Amino acid sequence: MSGLPWELVCAECSSVYAGDAFRYRCDCGGTLDVQHAVTTSVSDELFDDRLRSKAPLDRSGVWRFRELVLPLSERYVCTRGEGNTPLYWSDRVARYVGLNQLGLKHEGENPTGSFKDRGMTTGMSMARYFGAEKVAVASTGNTSASAAAYAAMAGLESIVFIPDGQIAYGKLGQALAYGARTVQIAGDFDDAMRLVERMCNEDGIYLLNSVNPFRIEGQKAIGFELLQDLDWTVPDWIVLPGGNLGNNTALTKGMLELKARGIISKLPRVAVIQASGANPLHRAWHGDGVLRPVKADTIATAIKIGAPVSFTKSVRGLRALGGVVEQVTDTEILEAKAVVDAAGIGAEPASCATVAGVRKLVAAGTIPPDALVCGVLTGHVLKDPGVVVDYHTGKHPGTRANPPVRVAANLDAIRTVLSKHP
Ligand code: F0G
Image (cartoon, rainbow, N blue to C red; front, top):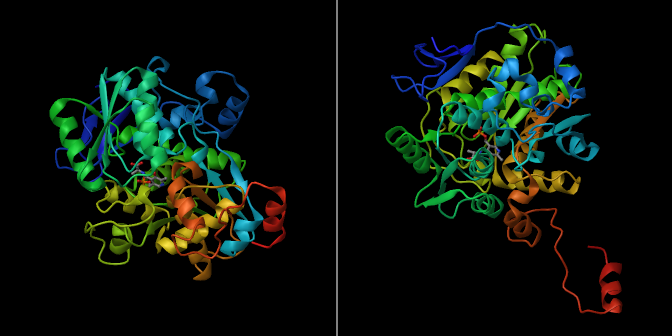
C-alpha cells in the first residue's frame, strides 16, 4: 500500500500497481491509468466556490479540480496558475464551419502557450513527490517548452529530445530560454520518443511524456473547466486534434469520471481530428482497429506523429463516448487557421485541425448545424510564426493571404498603397 489515494491499472491487461510505483508501463508493455479511490464527495458548487478563492491551488484551472485530478499533498505541487483559458464564441468561425455557434477553448493561452501546462503541473509535482533531480521528454515542441519551464520553476534539470529541424521556432526558443538541455535528434518524433523512454528507464530520469499517467490526469481539467465555463451544461460535441493521443484519452477519461461522480448526467460526443499525413488513428478506426505506425508528414508539426503512445486508451475512450475520427489535409488546416487567426483569436496549425475537422463533420452531416459544439485550440499563434509568414507571403497555397507591402518611406507612396484594395 502506498498511502496514496489511487492505484495504477494497466490499460491492456488490468494488472494493478501501487500509486507510488515508479513506472510508466505495465510489465506487459501496456500503458497505465490512474484509478482514483473515491474517498471524498465533490460537487459542481465546490468547484464554483473555488473560483472566488485566492489560494494558489484554487486559482489553478487544474488543481481547482484536485479531488478528480490528483489528490496530492500541496507541498509537492508546482503550479503556475495554469488553465483558466478563455472560451471564445466567434460568429465568423461558426459561419466558416457551418454551425450556428461554436465555442473555442483556447488552451494556447496557458502559461507556456499550450495545453501541455495542464499535464505538466501534475507530472512535475509527481517528479517532486518522487524526489527526482532530472526530468526528460521527447517532443514536437510544446511538451518540451512546458517541461523546461516547469522544471526550472521546480528547481529540476530538464532534458528534451526534439526531432532535428522539425519543430517550430517559438517552441525551440522556449526550450532554450528556459534552460533545458536540448538534444536535437537526427530522426523524427517517434524515434525521439523511443529513445527518451529507454534512457529514462535505464538512467532513472523521470519521464514526463504523456505515457506518464499523471500527465493525463492534469489534462483532464480541460474538459472540467470547459464544462464549468458552460455552467455545467454538457455540449453535444467536443472536438480536438490528435497526435500522440494523450489529450483525447484525458478528455474521455475525465468525462466518464464526472458522470460516475454524478456531476454530469450525460456524456458529450468526442471527435478527434488528425492530419491526413499523420493519421494512424484514423486508419485504424476506419479499418480493422489495429495500430500500424506510419511515417508522419504534415505542416502541423505538433501532431507529426506516426506511432501514438496512447492509442489503446484513446480508442477505449472514443468507443465509450460515441466518438468519431476525422482527418484533414494541410491545405484544410491552413485555410481554417487563416479564419481563426483573422477572427482575432489565432492559434498554431495543429490547433486549427480542430476547426477544419468540425467543418468537414458538419458538411458530412455528422454534426448538425444547431449542435452545441466546443473545439479545443491547443497552442498559441506565436508558437509557429514561420507557417504564418509563409502562408501570407504565398509560400503555401491559400485563399486568404494577407501579404505585407513594401513601400518607400514617404506618406504619398504609403497613401497610394493604402487606397488600393488588397
Ligand atoms: N496540438 C498541439 C499544439 C500539440 O502540441 C499536440 C501534441 C497536440 C495537439 C496533440 O496532442 O499528442 O495529446 O494527441 N504535442 C506533443 C508535444 C506531442 O511534444 O508537444 P496529443
